[in-house]
Image 1 (cartoon, rainbow, N blue to C red):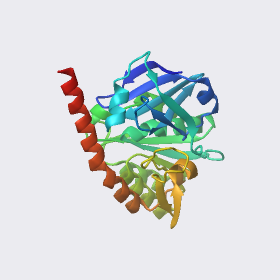
Image 2 (cartoon, rainbow, N blue to C red):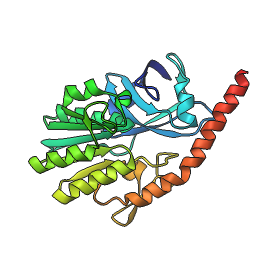
Image 3 (cartoon, rainbow, N blue to C red):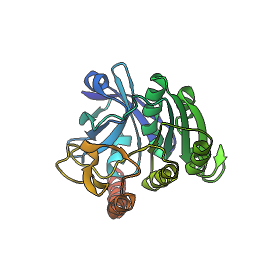
Image 4 (tube, one colour):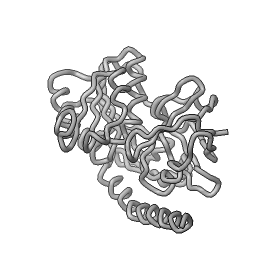
Length: 276
């Protein structure tokens, strides 16, 4: 039974929930994800596993559409219909001695378990988190506990004024790193990969396009990597950032954005009518 045992709002649109699920907790590794349904009539959505502590599994999600909105309405004690996990390949961290972990917005939730695992593995970890403004910052303490942390904001309201790539460029010009891990908006990961490619630094990106079943059968999460079709759910979600065709993936994701927005708005309107 996937009962919510804790729920916490990290900002106005990002929520952390925790369930007690020993089977998932004992097998999950950094970088893996779950496919869940909020209720029996709900759609399947992917959520990356944020943290594991004993038998407890935490997820962090941003309210961006109908399903995440419905999930946000569940409270402690409520049950999530289905949680299938762990799925996808774990992030490769073995042998990495010095790394940079980059998180953009809600992608910081996915970046955290990677930074944590690298730190526990004895690596020297630097994290760079990027947000639009100070009100959207999440997980600052958690990242400080496992890495040397830089925070950037687009408007300069907190930390460093600018983009994560500005800090990244300075770091890789001054020192050598085994690997850069980037998780966040596609456009951010694209420019992280372009920045590191100039210096020849290995770069891993976490691709989270549209998913339905999480087993490679629906084909919704396909992307091009070095000219070959790959599926994020079974071949990834991690890929060599220097080989991903970001422009193609961005175009595919934008195709669904307007549909998702309208469905979300219609759903909220219908709920409002039912309440009245």
